[in-house]
Image 1 (cartoon, rainbow, N blue to C red):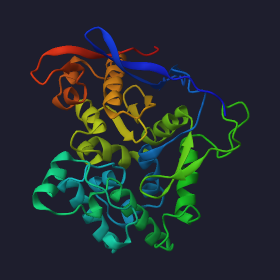
Image 2: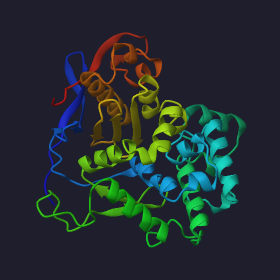
Image 3: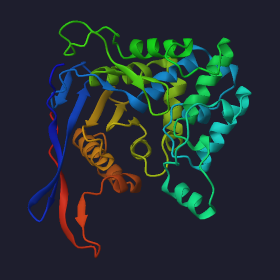
Image 4: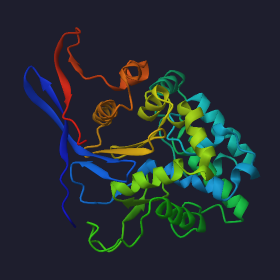
Length: 340
């Protein structure tokens, strides 16, 4: 296994002393296809995690699910989402699930508390349990059931790696990302094949270098064939994420940006205007560090201007001041910059 070298992207300074550090990578693909890296990932393959969702959702168009089920833009968006489990999300998943003719018992994504703190508090106050539709992957799993029904595939084991659905998804991901399960010699990974594992929701997920993740997004969102997926992101940023979600904040601030977070410290941003892509990977997976670093990087690139940085959702994600409980500022988080 080849070594990689993350750089320090963020440090917290409390009264002049470094108290906290976060290391990672930023990788930008410019219009001339030039790759600019902050930190040397050495083409190490990281797991896509939920950044895979829009790539997986490309099958909606390939298999014409949008026409077969008369899908709304909202329903397409929820299939790509890592949603916060709020009423708008649950309602949209339920709408699409009803169209498929399945019920909640067929979903294999498992249970977790909704990502929305508001919804978590509601559950505490009412004494209710979370439901499977609040799982952030419920839209994706509903899409998987829908594909199986249209294609005549068995539905009870749709999540297994050998299922024809998962084979089709794997092939689509590597097609869009310009990768191969057997990388060429010299690509920086000596394992003979890109690893796969189970994602948190139980379905297969694949690994690849960061640059290939960005290629996948550029090939998806800049292809007119997949315009419905692009428009689903543009028109429904809150459904993609929701309360206190970084990707929602970025897309609400600038309608020319497509953003999608993934677990493991990932977020990919595509600039539809300049046709460029940016990805961040925070090695300790800290979500606050990911947000601050990415927003500062987008600011340096000019993808978020001064007006956009004053957007309330962006400001909430970009809190750099270290405050006491009395509101006294005694330090701040400092972004270390990126390569140009």
